[in-house]
Image 1 (cartoon, one colour):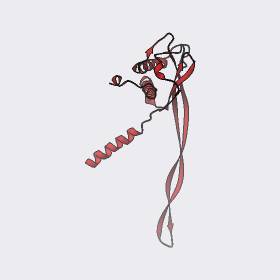
Image 2 (cartoon, one colour; image 1 turned 135 degrees about the vertical axis):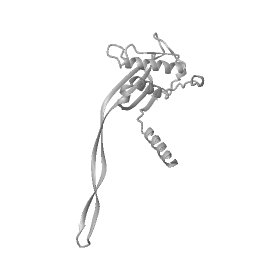
Image 3 (cartoon, rainbow, N blue to C red; image 1 turned 120 degrees about the vertical axis):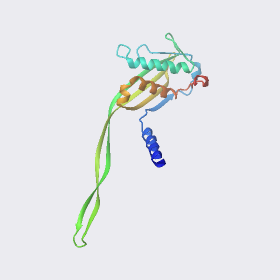
Image 4 (cartoon, rainbow, N blue to C red; image 1 turned 90 degrees about the vertical axis):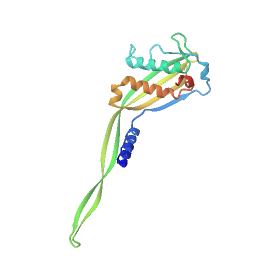
Length: 190
């Protein structure tokens, strides 16, 4: 009984470790002291918009304001120190796998009066079609008009991700901000 429970627990751990999470990257200008920045705002029309503010843009702005506020910066619509822009992209991707499969071919040796089976290697082609989403968060110093930080999330979009787009975006933004040069103060972590 204990062995069955152990095997079940191991299966749960194995399956949960196969969950698809986005890959997070970031880059920033290491010569800049980020503590000099006190305020942030957004470009008048960010790159996720099409002449109007989309729901995705609203989700991105909401969670970005929360993450930046946690780090001690204040949101300012007029003359902020940092301007934030978003880029999103969804691409159709395809992976082709060559999977080995062994069939066994049998034959009868008449003189030895025996059956023999030999492995017959074959390869099966598997095609995996999926969508890959990319989210970029760019921060630009308003005065110098130079990018000072960029955070990127790239990951496979599942059906569940598309059905819960708001939580998918929130999780990606929170993950991206873990790489932001200004950490969350300890008292804000609670």
